[in-house]
Image (cartoon, rainbow, N blue to C red; front, top):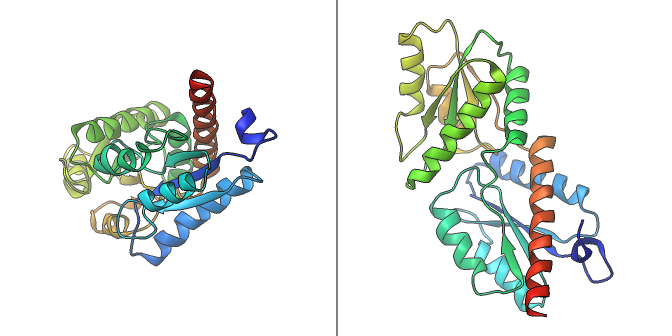
Amino acid sequence: MTRAALGSEPPTDLVLVAHGTRDAAGAATTRAVRDAVAQRLPGVDVRLAFVDVQNPTVRDVVGARARAGRRVAVVPLLLSIGYHLEVDVTAAVAPHPRVASSAALGPHPLLTQALVDRLTEAGATSGDDLVLAAAGSSRAAGATDARAAARMLGDVWGRPVQVGFGASAQPSVPDAVAAARAAGARRVVVSSYLVGEGFFASRLHESGADIVAAPMAAHPALVDLAVHRYADMCARLDECERAVG
């Protein structure tokens, strides 16, 4: 960790930014991720903020911590670049010189590890055809990120992985599952490229797949990645302060 994270001055605050959901299980999962990250960072003030559906908003949380004179590392629990990251998170961070935000969590090898473990837990085997279910984004880069995550999963799984989207991109998850069956798949398994439960996750069980793996949730690899991103943002804030100091 950096001087600001663990040194004599108070540790840099961490704001984890989730999408938000009305689903009670999904909200509980987000809190579990926050708790797991906080356990890894004793002494750090770790807070949750949201870009949609739930409160408090990322703008409100970041603004309040910045006005209190705190340094803040923002780590989005968002898996691909998209509107919320490019607009909501950027707008919340931009006014504050002592606030830094990391990029989207994915694609990343640690997330691949989490996906493989969830598939194994669900009963998937090496002979199954996989569809990576991503939420989708109005930003073309979001679909590019999801396809990169699918390639990374395919490299580990040992066979190509198709992508299906929940919205804003094609093919849909049901269409990707149907295409796999039409191509001769013996069994089709959906890999949930999601942090937690919610509207999209619940619809995956209607996709026609034989198995739907659980979201990554507070998988240790995802928690590791969030902690690494926090350390990176602390180092960036140190560099910024040295540059103007």
